[in-house]
Amino acid sequence: MIPRIDVELTERCDNNCAHCYINQPAADSQIQARELNTAAWKEILQQAADLGALTVRFTGGEPLLRDDFKDLYIFARRLGMKVQIFTNGRRVTPQLAALLSHMPPLEKVEVTLYGTTQTSYEAVSRARGSFQQAMRGIELLKQELVPFIVKGVLLPQNEEDLPLLEGFARTVHGMDQPPAIPMFLEKRARRDCSACNERIEALRPIPEKIVEMIVQRHTNALDEWRQLVETRHQVPGPKLFSCGAGTTVAVDAYGVAQPCLALRAPELCFDLSQGSIADAMRHFKKMAALEAGHPDYLTRCSRCFLKSLCEQCPARSWSEHGNLDQPVDYLCRLTHAQAEKAGIIELGDKAWLKKKE
Amino acid sequence: MTAVHFNAIYTHSDDVVSRVIEGEVIIVPLVSGIGDADDDLFSLNETGRDIWQRLDGQTTVADILDALAGEYDAPRDTIAAETTALLSELLARGMIREKRD
View (cartoon, rainbow over the protein chains, first blue to last red):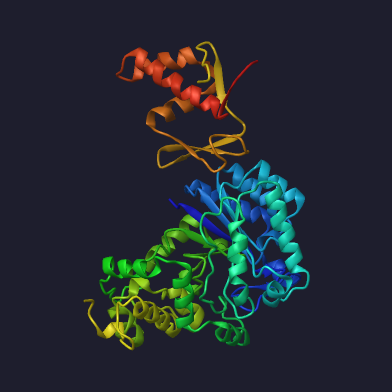
């Protein structure tokens, strides 16, 4: 049984964001030709429903680029699934908004808003006209009373705009939390562009800045970090997977099943042209026994009582280094900055050399 | 409370999809206006599942009660009260409809 399925309908996107880990050009016909067709997606969705999946997340790239999006959406809903849509909003049409109103997705549409002005938005999206289209899409969702939230991303190009984004979010009906603003920028998921990775790395905020921004925006952040470490301070050991990876399934645009949306290491993935989702889930079971072998992981991560605070995981190692167990130094620095700010460790301490007091 | 008629035949609404997941019946609205809120799923326990599966568009409420009375070790009045309460709620939520042919 699986509770949900993540579906990356396409890697193509009509934006060209500098920080993106996956985007391909919207008009790339060669990439488009490799994407699964409608029938193949319907078969996958049917299999997921037969395995009990109650929710499907349609993401990308930009999933609304698919000509068959409405068809797939209605199909998923008629299977009795809730549908979560991740979109930049640019391709929301009056017809789509009306559909989402009449046949609601039962999950809030999540619209990533890269800025609240044309200048800030298009400095990130690098697509002329994208801001106006995104705002029009949001307006259409509002008019049709389609529940949605907005979220952002922290980049130098839009950093000063963040208070405005948060202000805009407060005007969104039903948005009862501040907008999620991921601050860790992941490197290219396909490891397909060194220049892109250099750019992404240069865009990453320094960890101390991220910590300050989080603490400013979430008054309970320090308490939450302390509590998390207090309740889950056992050193993790060499076991690689302690997350939910492998208990659900993500399927990429070409029909490869992944144990999570972020994890694309070939040895862990399963080509659905060779079998079913159930076969993929059996394949994922092998992950549970995997242990780290990288000396840095064994020296640091496996002995670190801050592990519960840290976003280090095999997916991050894969996109950063091309293996499953080499620590991502940036994440280590970020976690230590959080712990220092919360008073869990002293400045300069290395948590893997200390015991939790 | 929406009135339930013992002579009536009810069937599942075309505006919902029912799923059986790990033995539980979950009713998923397809269109807006079903249920209490647009994001509400409705789940049925074992008895509810039994009733739901008997709403086949051919069986009257009275016949359903007779069948349930034969299967469950409970007074018929209790079965009738619980069954009509569930049917009333399903009707109010638009998840079932009366079949009138």
